Length: 424
Image (cartoon, rainbow, N blue to C red):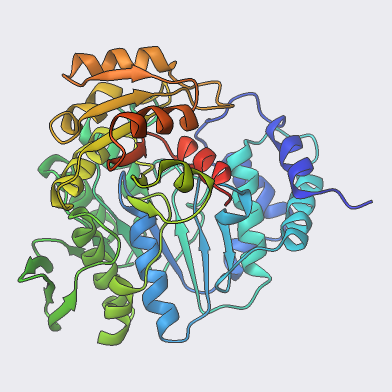
């Protein structure tokens, strides 16, 4: 009997005792065993950064597909199902295809040590290599220099979205150190689109690009993006574009759109592709309004929103997004992992929300207990309570404020749980 992808994925979890162990040796070994599928991919756009990678990738994909291109896309983590990580020529990988590439990687690896992310990334590359397409979008999992996706000798374009503090235990505790890891995806002679950066990060990226002779296309230098009278205005040396605002909500999406447009123009795409990038992108759990499902029914008539941001920069972006929304009392349901700066994430949100109800993330060993999340919220000035699960939190909020805006936030793992509970 054919094994299901879930069975193989469970086996892969046991191949390495540590969840994160940044090195490239195991990836190169397995790729060589599989005859180096990374060398047989359609042109690659490789994306690193602390925040905005997924949204930028979604916009680029929308722009490319609007022109008829078939696009592979790799992203992580998944929300509801692992299959979301691998999109083959525009379609989520099928169970049959996923099982096949996972099994081939598992057999090829044998009993050798390899992390879950490494072997599943190799499986994605194998799937891409054997399926025709016009482009491949690769999103870095963690960092860049030692990330399992960093195996492409000559991408078409690399992109570095804003760099901020996150995963300091793996990438370093300064912006410069983290930027150095992200800049590890820059390749000799390959154009690199750079989103807005702190000066410390930009200095590191510029030095790294200079050493490799990689042309930079940097925000504020080579391209500019802003809003004017409810429109997105983009300008570079090729000229000016007057476009609709991004359909992905939040002021920060204007900058992500700018990076996506810069990449599309570098790839030679036309104005229609750029407009499609900002009007047709879809990226779940990034300030997404849920419109149907049992949790939506439970919350009604309150609005139910979902966001997976989880670091201080994401907290600031979320606060700005809420300020730009129509006035409505906003109540948070929040669960986070203990690897995150919870105080830094919550502090910007204290002034734009009414209350926070803390939950533990179901099934996650590294969840912050709900009571501890509530304590952190109180420390930054929030009115906070706890609930045993998301459904109870929704019911408690709507009992007191039936016409509220309820925003579930703090972790992509919590977002994935909510999507499954809501019928995804």
